[in-house]
Image (cartoon, rainbow, N blue to C red; front, side, top):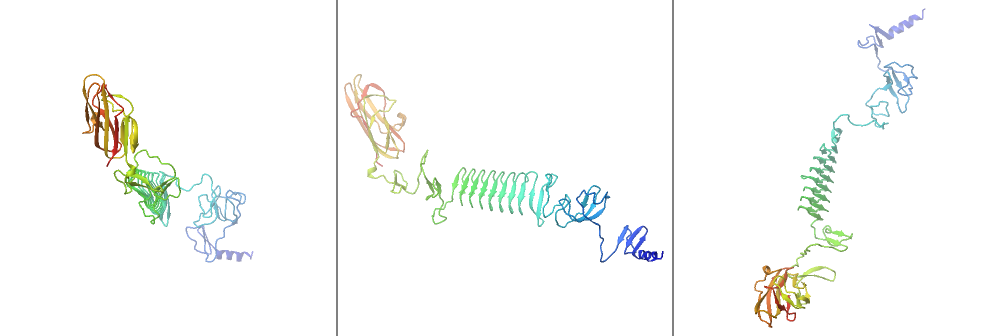
Amino acid sequence: MKFLAPLTLLFMLTFSVINGQVGINTTTPNASSILDISASDKGLLIPRIALIGLNDTTTILNPVESLLVYNTTSNSEITPGFYFWNGSQWTEFSSNASGGGSSDPHKWTLQGNELTANDFIGSTNWSALTFKVNNQKIASFHPNGGLLLGLGAASNVNNAIAIGTNASATTNESIALGYSTIASGYRSTAIGYNAQATTNNYSLALGANAVASGLNSAVFGNSSTASGQNATAVGYGANATNANTIILGNSISDITNWNATKVGIGTNTPSEKLEVKGNVKIDGILKITDGTQGNGKVLTSDANGNASWQEVSGEQKIFAEMNANSTSSLSQYNPINFGNTVITQGINTSSNGFQVVQSGVYRVTYAISVSKANGSDTNVKFYLAKGWGSSNAVQGSAGYGFVGNGDTTTITVTKYVQLNAYDQLYVFSDASNNAISILPDGTYFNIELVD
Protein backbone atom coordinates (compact mmCIF):
# COMPACT_ATOMS: atom_id res chain seq x y z
CA MET A 1 0.00 0.00 0.00
CA LYS A 2 3.04 2.26 -0.12
CA PHE A 3 2.17 3.45 -3.68
CA LEU A 4 -0.92 5.22 -2.32
CA ALA A 5 1.06 7.79 -0.46
CA PRO A 6 2.48 9.64 -3.51
CA LEU A 7 -0.93 9.53 -5.27
CA THR A 8 -2.67 10.95 -2.24
CA LEU A 9 -0.07 13.70 -1.98
CA LEU A 10 -0.47 14.57 -5.71
CA PHE A 11 -4.24 14.79 -5.37
CA MET A 12 -3.91 17.05 -2.35
CA LEU A 13 -1.48 19.33 -4.25
CA THR A 14 -3.77 19.55 -7.37
CA PHE A 15 -7.35 19.66 -6.05
CA SER A 16 -8.87 21.62 -3.24
CA VAL A 17 -12.36 20.79 -2.06
CA ILE A 18 -14.00 23.36 0.18
CA ASN A 19 -17.63 23.14 1.25
CA GLY A 20 -18.56 20.97 -1.76
CA GLN A 21 -16.68 23.21 -4.23
CA VAL A 22 -13.92 21.91 -6.49
CA GLY A 23 -10.89 23.98 -7.39
CA ILE A 24 -8.33 22.96 -9.98
CA ASN A 25 -5.01 24.75 -9.77
CA THR A 26 -6.47 26.97 -7.03
CA THR A 27 -7.00 26.59 -3.32
CA THR A 28 -9.69 29.26 -3.20
CA PRO A 29 -12.43 28.35 -5.67
CA ASN A 30 -15.01 31.08 -6.22
CA ALA A 31 -17.90 30.79 -3.80
CA SER A 32 -20.47 30.95 -6.63
CA SER A 33 -18.94 28.05 -8.56
CA ILE A 34 -19.14 24.30 -8.23
CA LEU A 35 -15.92 24.00 -10.27
CA ASP A 36 -13.22 26.67 -10.54
CA ILE A 37 -10.35 25.99 -12.94
CA SER A 38 -7.43 28.39 -12.85
CA ALA A 39 -4.65 28.57 -15.45
CA SER A 40 -2.54 31.19 -17.21
CA ASP A 41 -1.44 29.20 -20.26
CA LYS A 42 -3.94 26.37 -20.59
CA GLY A 43 -7.61 25.98 -21.59
CA LEU A 44 -10.55 23.71 -20.99
CA LEU A 45 -10.78 21.07 -23.70
CA ILE A 46 -14.39 20.11 -24.38
CA PRO A 47 -14.97 16.67 -25.92
CA ARG A 48 -14.73 16.78 -29.74
CA ILE A 49 -17.59 14.84 -31.28
CA ALA A 50 -18.44 14.18 -34.94
CA LEU A 51 -22.20 14.76 -34.88
CA ILE A 52 -24.29 13.56 -37.83
CA GLY A 53 -26.93 16.26 -37.59
CA LEU A 54 -29.02 18.38 -35.28
CA ASN A 55 -31.14 15.41 -34.22
CA ASP A 56 -28.24 12.96 -33.77
CA THR A 57 -28.86 10.67 -30.75
CA THR A 58 -26.72 7.75 -31.88
CA THR A 59 -23.25 9.25 -31.68
CA ILE A 60 -23.96 10.02 -28.01
CA LEU A 61 -26.65 7.72 -26.70
CA ASN A 62 -29.41 9.33 -24.67
CA PRO A 63 -27.82 12.81 -24.42
CA VAL A 64 -28.94 14.68 -21.36
CA GLU A 65 -30.22 18.24 -21.53
CA SER A 66 -27.37 20.85 -21.38
CA LEU A 67 -24.74 18.33 -22.51
CA LEU A 68 -21.91 20.33 -24.16
CA VAL A 69 -19.71 19.15 -27.06
CA TYR A 70 -17.58 20.60 -29.87
CA ASN A 71 -18.80 19.34 -33.23
CA THR A 72 -16.12 18.59 -35.83
CA THR A 73 -18.25 17.76 -38.89
CA SER A 74 -19.89 19.97 -41.51
CA ASN A 75 -23.00 19.33 -43.64
CA SER A 76 -26.22 21.05 -44.68
CA GLU A 77 -27.50 21.05 -41.10
CA ILE A 78 -24.46 21.51 -38.97
CA THR A 79 -21.05 23.19 -38.99
CA PRO A 80 -18.03 22.93 -36.66
CA GLY A 81 -18.57 24.67 -33.34
CA PHE A 82 -19.88 24.35 -29.80
CA TYR A 83 -23.30 22.71 -29.42
CA PHE A 84 -25.49 21.84 -26.46
CA TRP A 85 -28.39 19.41 -26.24
CA ASN A 86 -31.59 21.36 -25.52
CA GLY A 87 -33.64 18.28 -24.79
CA SER A 88 -34.76 17.65 -28.37
CA GLN A 89 -31.85 18.62 -30.66
CA TRP A 90 -28.34 20.01 -30.75
CA THR A 91 -28.22 23.83 -30.62
CA GLU A 92 -25.20 25.87 -31.61
CA PHE A 93 -23.93 28.61 -29.37
CA SER A 94 -24.72 31.89 -31.19
CA SER A 95 -21.89 34.15 -32.26
CA ASN A 96 -21.71 37.69 -33.66
CA ALA A 97 -18.77 36.78 -35.86
CA SER A 98 -19.45 36.11 -39.53
CA GLY A 99 -18.85 32.66 -40.87
CA GLY A 100 -20.20 29.92 -43.04
CA GLY A 101 -23.58 28.28 -42.93
CA SER A 102 -25.22 27.84 -39.55
CA SER A 103 -27.60 25.37 -38.01
CA ASP A 104 -29.26 28.20 -36.07
CA PRO A 105 -32.54 28.83 -37.97
CA HIS A 106 -32.53 32.49 -36.85
CA LYS A 107 -29.01 33.23 -38.03
CA TRP A 108 -28.42 35.05 -41.36
CA THR A 109 -24.93 34.54 -42.75
CA LEU A 110 -22.91 36.62 -45.18
CA GLN A 111 -22.05 33.63 -47.33
CA GLY A 112 -25.65 32.82 -48.27
CA ASN A 113 -28.50 30.98 -46.65
CA GLU A 114 -30.69 28.03 -47.37
CA LEU A 115 -34.31 29.19 -47.26
CA THR A 116 -37.71 27.60 -47.07
CA ALA A 117 -41.00 28.88 -48.44
CA ASN A 118 -41.88 30.38 -45.06
CA ASP A 119 -38.61 32.27 -44.50
CA PHE A 120 -38.62 36.07 -44.91
CA ILE A 121 -36.84 39.26 -43.94
CA GLY A 122 -39.12 41.82 -42.35
CA SER A 123 -41.43 42.52 -39.47
CA THR A 124 -44.42 40.74 -38.03
CA ASN A 125 -46.33 43.87 -36.97
CA TRP A 126 -47.92 46.93 -38.67
CA SER A 127 -44.78 49.07 -38.74
CA ALA A 128 -42.50 50.30 -41.49
CA LEU A 129 -39.38 48.25 -42.24
CA THR A 130 -36.39 50.59 -42.25
CA PHE A 131 -32.80 50.11 -43.48
CA LYS A 132 -29.89 52.36 -42.54
CA VAL A 133 -26.37 53.04 -43.84
CA ASN A 134 -23.89 54.80 -41.57
CA ASN A 135 -26.81 55.12 -39.15
CA GLN A 136 -28.81 57.13 -41.72
CA LYS A 137 -32.10 55.94 -43.20
CA ILE A 138 -31.61 54.73 -46.77
CA ALA A 139 -34.75 52.64 -47.33
CA SER A 140 -38.19 52.20 -45.83
CA PHE A 141 -41.19 50.03 -46.69
CA HIS A 142 -44.52 51.03 -45.15
CA PRO A 143 -47.46 48.60 -44.97
CA ASN A 144 -49.73 51.33 -46.44
CA GLY A 145 -47.71 51.11 -49.65
CA GLY A 146 -45.21 53.91 -49.10
CA LEU A 147 -41.67 53.24 -50.36
CA LEU A 148 -38.47 55.27 -50.18
CA LEU A 149 -34.98 54.33 -51.33
CA GLY A 150 -32.02 56.69 -51.13
CA LEU A 151 -30.29 58.98 -48.65
CA GLY A 152 -32.51 61.90 -47.76
CA ALA A 153 -35.47 60.45 -49.66
CA ALA A 154 -38.97 61.05 -48.29
CA SER A 155 -42.31 59.53 -49.26
CA ASN A 156 -45.90 59.68 -48.14
CA VAL A 157 -46.91 56.44 -46.43
CA ASN A 158 -49.97 56.03 -48.67
CA ASN A 159 -48.74 54.32 -51.84
CA ALA A 160 -46.15 57.00 -52.64
CA ILE A 161 -42.74 56.06 -54.08
CA ALA A 162 -39.50 58.06 -53.76
CA ILE A 163 -36.29 56.60 -55.21
CA GLY A 164 -33.03 58.54 -55.37
CA THR A 165 -30.97 60.81 -53.16
CA ASN A 166 -33.23 63.56 -51.74
CA ALA A 167 -36.16 62.35 -53.86
CA SER A 168 -39.49 63.49 -52.40
CA ALA A 169 -42.98 62.08 -53.01
CA THR A 170 -45.03 63.79 -50.32
CA THR A 171 -48.63 63.28 -51.43
CA ASN A 172 -50.79 60.20 -51.76
CA GLU A 173 -49.94 57.95 -54.72
CA SER A 174 -47.22 60.26 -56.02
CA ILE A 175 -43.98 59.02 -57.62
CA ALA A 176 -40.52 60.66 -57.58
CA LEU A 177 -37.62 58.89 -59.34
CA GLY A 178 -34.19 60.50 -59.55
CA TYR A 179 -31.82 62.79 -57.70
CA SER A 180 -33.68 65.65 -55.96
CA THR A 181 -36.94 64.91 -57.79
CA ILE A 182 -40.13 66.33 -56.26
CA ALA A 183 -43.67 65.01 -56.67
CA SER A 184 -45.86 67.11 -54.39
CA GLY A 185 -49.17 67.07 -56.30
CA TYR A 186 -51.76 64.36 -55.67
CA ARG A 187 -51.01 61.41 -57.99
CA SER A 188 -48.23 63.40 -59.61
CA THR A 189 -45.12 61.84 -61.18
CA ALA A 190 -41.59 63.27 -61.51
CA ILE A 191 -38.84 61.28 -63.26
CA GLY A 192 -35.32 62.57 -63.93
CA TYR A 193 -32.64 64.68 -62.31
CA ASN A 194 -34.30 67.54 -60.39
CA ALA A 195 -37.63 66.95 -62.16
CA GLN A 196 -40.62 68.52 -60.40
CA ALA A 197 -44.33 67.71 -60.56
CA THR A 198 -45.56 70.26 -58.07
CA THR A 199 -48.50 72.17 -56.66
CA ASN A 200 -51.38 70.73 -58.67
CA ASN A 201 -52.81 67.25 -59.04
CA TYR A 202 -52.12 64.67 -61.76
CA SER A 203 -49.07 66.47 -63.17
CA LEU A 204 -46.25 64.63 -64.97
CA ALA A 205 -42.64 65.81 -65.36
CA LEU A 206 -40.25 63.62 -67.36
CA GLY A 207 -36.69 64.84 -67.98
CA ALA A 208 -33.82 66.58 -66.23
CA ASN A 209 -34.99 69.88 -64.68
CA ALA A 210 -38.47 69.39 -66.16
CA VAL A 211 -41.23 71.22 -64.23
CA ALA A 212 -44.98 70.48 -64.43
CA SER A 213 -46.94 72.78 -62.12
CA GLY A 214 -50.35 73.07 -63.82
CA LEU A 215 -53.34 70.86 -63.06
CA ASN A 216 -53.20 67.83 -65.40
CA SER A 217 -50.08 69.29 -67.03
CA ALA A 218 -47.41 67.13 -68.67
CA VAL A 219 -43.78 67.83 -69.54
CA PHE A 220 -41.46 65.71 -71.70
CA GLY A 221 -37.91 66.98 -72.17
CA ASN A 222 -34.91 68.55 -70.53
CA SER A 223 -35.62 71.95 -68.91
CA SER A 224 -39.17 72.09 -70.28
CA THR A 225 -42.09 73.54 -68.27
CA ALA A 226 -45.89 73.39 -68.27
CA SER A 227 -47.68 75.78 -65.92
CA GLY A 228 -51.03 76.05 -67.72
CA GLN A 229 -53.95 73.82 -66.79
CA ASN A 230 -54.14 70.77 -69.10
CA ALA A 231 -51.02 72.07 -70.88
CA THR A 232 -48.35 69.86 -72.46
CA ALA A 233 -44.73 70.77 -73.28
CA VAL A 234 -42.62 68.46 -75.45
CA GLY A 235 -38.91 68.90 -76.21
CA TYR A 236 -35.90 70.72 -74.79
CA GLY A 237 -36.84 74.09 -73.32
CA ALA A 238 -40.50 73.90 -74.37
CA ASN A 239 -42.71 76.19 -72.28
CA ALA A 240 -46.51 75.73 -72.12
CA THR A 241 -47.96 78.57 -70.03
CA ASN A 242 -51.49 78.80 -71.44
CA ALA A 243 -54.30 76.38 -70.55
CA ASN A 244 -55.23 73.58 -72.95
CA THR A 245 -52.17 74.05 -75.17
CA ILE A 246 -49.57 71.67 -76.60
CA ILE A 247 -46.13 73.20 -77.21
CA LEU A 248 -43.58 71.32 -79.32
CA GLY A 249 -40.00 72.55 -78.93
CA ASN A 250 -38.67 75.89 -77.75
CA SER A 251 -38.80 79.35 -79.28
CA ILE A 252 -35.30 79.28 -80.80
CA SER A 253 -35.42 80.38 -84.45
CA ASP A 254 -31.72 80.75 -85.31
CA ILE A 255 -30.67 77.61 -87.20
CA THR A 256 -27.14 77.95 -85.79
CA ASN A 257 -28.43 77.69 -82.22
CA TRP A 258 -29.28 74.07 -81.38
CA ASN A 259 -30.18 73.72 -85.08
CA ALA A 260 -33.61 75.16 -84.18
CA THR A 261 -36.63 73.05 -83.29
CA LYS A 262 -38.35 71.07 -86.03
CA VAL A 263 -41.35 68.74 -86.19
CA GLY A 264 -41.68 66.18 -88.95
CA ILE A 265 -44.89 64.30 -89.82
CA GLY A 266 -44.24 61.58 -92.35
CA THR A 267 -40.56 62.55 -92.58
CA ASN A 268 -37.56 62.07 -90.30
CA THR A 269 -35.57 64.97 -91.76
CA PRO A 270 -37.75 68.09 -91.39
CA SER A 271 -36.15 71.27 -92.71
CA GLU A 272 -38.64 73.72 -91.18
CA LYS A 273 -40.47 74.17 -87.89
CA LEU A 274 -43.21 71.90 -89.27
CA GLU A 275 -42.85 69.68 -92.32
CA VAL A 276 -45.68 67.38 -93.39
CA LYS A 277 -45.22 64.64 -95.96
CA GLY A 278 -48.70 64.23 -97.41
CA ASN A 279 -51.99 66.09 -97.64
CA VAL A 280 -53.25 68.50 -95.00
CA LYS A 281 -56.92 69.21 -94.30
CA ILE A 282 -57.98 72.41 -92.55
CA ASP A 283 -61.60 72.72 -91.50
CA GLY A 284 -61.60 76.42 -90.72
CA ILE A 285 -59.61 79.56 -91.45
CA LEU A 286 -55.92 79.31 -92.33
CA LYS A 287 -54.01 82.30 -90.99
CA ILE A 288 -50.55 83.06 -92.39
CA THR A 289 -48.76 86.02 -90.82
CA ASP A 290 -45.21 86.26 -92.16
CA GLY A 291 -44.96 90.04 -92.23
CA THR A 292 -46.03 90.34 -95.87
CA GLN A 293 -49.77 90.00 -95.19
CA GLY A 294 -52.10 92.90 -95.89
CA ASN A 295 -55.63 93.84 -96.90
CA GLY A 296 -56.44 92.80 -100.45
CA LYS A 297 -53.28 90.77 -100.97
CA VAL A 298 -53.27 87.28 -102.44
CA LEU A 299 -51.15 84.26 -101.49
CA THR A 300 -48.64 83.37 -104.20
CA SER A 301 -45.87 80.78 -104.60
CA ASP A 302 -42.35 80.92 -105.98
CA ALA A 303 -40.68 78.16 -108.00
CA ASN A 304 -39.75 76.27 -104.80
CA GLY A 305 -43.27 76.34 -103.36
CA ASN A 306 -42.54 79.07 -100.80
CA ALA A 307 -45.72 81.10 -100.29
CA SER A 308 -46.00 84.82 -99.56
CA TRP A 309 -48.61 87.54 -99.72
CA GLN A 310 -48.48 89.78 -102.80
CA GLU A 311 -50.35 92.80 -104.07
CA VAL A 312 -52.97 92.06 -106.71
CA SER A 313 -51.45 92.95 -110.09
CA GLY A 314 -53.28 94.20 -113.21
CA GLU A 315 -53.52 90.66 -114.47
CA GLN A 316 -55.33 89.55 -111.32
CA LYS A 317 -58.49 91.69 -111.38
CA ILE A 318 -61.56 90.52 -109.50
CA PHE A 319 -64.89 90.84 -111.31
CA ALA A 320 -68.00 88.99 -112.45
CA GLU A 321 -71.08 89.49 -114.64
CA MET A 322 -74.42 87.72 -115.02
CA ASN A 323 -77.44 88.27 -117.27
CA ALA A 324 -80.99 87.00 -117.36
CA ASN A 325 -81.67 84.03 -119.60
CA SER A 326 -85.47 83.86 -119.32
CA THR A 327 -88.54 86.03 -118.73
CA SER A 328 -89.81 86.20 -115.14
CA SER A 329 -92.37 88.09 -113.03
CA LEU A 330 -91.71 90.56 -110.23
CA SER A 331 -91.58 89.12 -106.69
CA GLN A 332 -90.73 91.18 -103.62
CA TYR A 333 -89.80 88.08 -101.65
CA ASN A 334 -87.11 86.71 -103.95
CA PRO A 335 -84.12 88.36 -105.62
CA ILE A 336 -84.04 88.88 -109.39
CA ASN A 337 -83.06 85.65 -111.12
CA PHE A 338 -80.31 86.30 -113.65
CA GLY A 339 -79.57 82.65 -114.27
CA ASN A 340 -76.56 82.94 -116.58
CA THR A 341 -73.00 83.70 -115.47
CA VAL A 342 -71.18 85.42 -118.30
CA ILE A 343 -67.75 85.65 -116.68
CA THR A 344 -66.21 85.53 -113.20
CA GLN A 345 -62.74 85.85 -111.68
CA GLY A 346 -62.21 85.76 -107.92
CA ILE A 347 -65.94 85.98 -107.14
CA ASN A 348 -68.46 83.24 -106.38
CA THR A 349 -71.75 83.35 -108.31
CA SER A 350 -75.20 81.79 -107.99
CA SER A 351 -78.28 82.14 -110.19
CA ASN A 352 -79.34 85.33 -108.43
CA GLY A 353 -76.31 86.95 -106.78
CA PHE A 354 -72.60 87.30 -106.00
CA GLN A 355 -70.41 86.31 -103.05
CA VAL A 356 -67.08 88.11 -102.71
CA VAL A 357 -64.10 86.35 -101.14
CA GLN A 358 -61.98 89.42 -100.61
CA SER A 359 -62.83 92.55 -98.66
CA GLY A 360 -62.77 95.86 -100.49
CA VAL A 361 -64.68 98.53 -102.40
CA TYR A 362 -66.63 97.19 -105.37
CA ARG A 363 -68.28 98.98 -108.30
CA VAL A 364 -71.66 97.33 -108.79
CA THR A 365 -74.02 97.88 -111.74
CA TYR A 366 -77.42 96.37 -112.37
CA ALA A 367 -79.88 96.93 -115.24
CA ILE A 368 -83.46 95.59 -115.23
CA SER A 369 -85.63 95.76 -118.36
CA VAL A 370 -89.39 95.41 -117.74
CA SER A 371 -92.60 95.50 -119.80
CA LYS A 372 -96.31 95.66 -118.88
CA ALA A 373 -99.05 93.82 -120.76
CA ASN A 374 -102.24 94.94 -118.94
CA GLY A 375 -103.64 96.81 -115.98
CA SER A 376 -103.03 100.36 -114.89
CA ASP A 377 -99.78 102.25 -115.21
CA THR A 378 -97.38 101.77 -112.30
CA ASN A 379 -94.00 102.71 -110.84
CA VAL A 380 -91.39 100.04 -110.16
CA LYS A 381 -88.43 100.06 -107.73
CA PHE A 382 -85.29 97.93 -107.52
CA TYR A 383 -82.44 97.97 -104.93
CA LEU A 384 -79.25 96.17 -103.84
CA ALA A 385 -79.23 94.06 -100.66
CA LYS A 386 -76.38 92.44 -98.66
CA GLY A 387 -78.47 89.43 -97.86
CA TRP A 388 -82.13 88.48 -98.12
CA GLY A 389 -84.84 91.16 -98.16
CA SER A 390 -85.27 94.89 -97.58
CA SER A 391 -83.77 94.79 -94.08
CA ASN A 392 -80.36 94.29 -95.73
CA ALA A 393 -80.82 96.98 -98.41
CA VAL A 394 -77.73 98.97 -99.45
CA GLN A 395 -78.43 102.64 -98.84
CA GLY A 396 -78.54 104.75 -102.02
CA SER A 397 -78.79 101.76 -104.35
CA ALA A 398 -82.46 102.10 -105.38
CA GLY A 399 -83.57 102.64 -108.98
CA TYR A 400 -87.12 103.74 -110.07
CA GLY A 401 -89.05 103.50 -113.31
CA PHE A 402 -92.54 104.16 -114.75
CA VAL A 403 -94.17 101.56 -116.94
CA GLY A 404 -97.55 101.69 -118.70
CA ASN A 405 -99.51 99.15 -120.70
CA GLY A 406 -97.51 97.99 -123.66
CA ASP A 407 -94.47 99.97 -122.51
CA THR A 408 -90.92 98.68 -122.01
CA THR A 409 -88.44 100.47 -119.76
CA THR A 410 -84.96 99.81 -118.35
CA ILE A 411 -83.75 100.90 -114.87
CA THR A 412 -79.95 101.08 -114.54
CA VAL A 413 -78.02 101.80 -111.31
CA THR A 414 -74.25 101.95 -110.62
CA LYS A 415 -73.10 102.03 -107.00
CA TYR A 416 -69.80 101.73 -105.07
CA VAL A 417 -70.26 99.30 -102.20
CA GLN A 418 -67.91 98.38 -99.30
CA LEU A 419 -68.03 94.61 -98.89
CA ASN A 420 -66.37 92.27 -96.42
CA ALA A 421 -65.02 88.87 -97.36
CA TYR A 422 -67.86 86.38 -98.01
CA ASP A 423 -70.57 89.08 -98.14
CA GLN A 424 -73.39 88.30 -100.59
CA LEU A 425 -75.10 90.81 -102.90
CA TYR A 426 -78.56 90.60 -104.58
CA VAL A 427 -81.05 92.78 -106.54
CA PHE A 428 -84.61 92.94 -105.14
CA SER A 429 -87.95 94.55 -106.16
CA ASP A 430 -90.19 96.30 -103.65
CA ALA A 431 -93.44 94.69 -104.86
CA SER A 432 -94.88 91.63 -106.56
CA ASN A 433 -96.72 92.12 -109.88
CA ASN A 434 -97.58 89.33 -112.28
CA ALA A 435 -98.48 91.86 -114.99
CA ILE A 436 -94.90 93.12 -115.16
CA SER A 437 -92.35 90.92 -116.88
CA ILE A 438 -88.56 91.05 -116.55
CA LEU A 439 -87.05 90.75 -120.00
CA PRO A 440 -83.81 88.74 -120.43
CA ASP A 441 -82.53 91.06 -123.15
CA GLY A 442 -81.31 94.15 -121.30
CA THR A 443 -81.22 92.61 -117.77
CA TYR A 444 -77.75 92.11 -116.29
CA PHE A 445 -75.75 92.37 -113.04
CA ASN A 446 -71.96 92.98 -112.76
CA ILE A 447 -69.40 93.66 -110.04
CA GLU A 448 -65.71 94.67 -109.98
CA LEU A 449 -63.17 95.20 -107.18
CA VAL A 450 -61.73 98.71 -107.44
CA ASP A 451 -59.95 99.16 -104.08
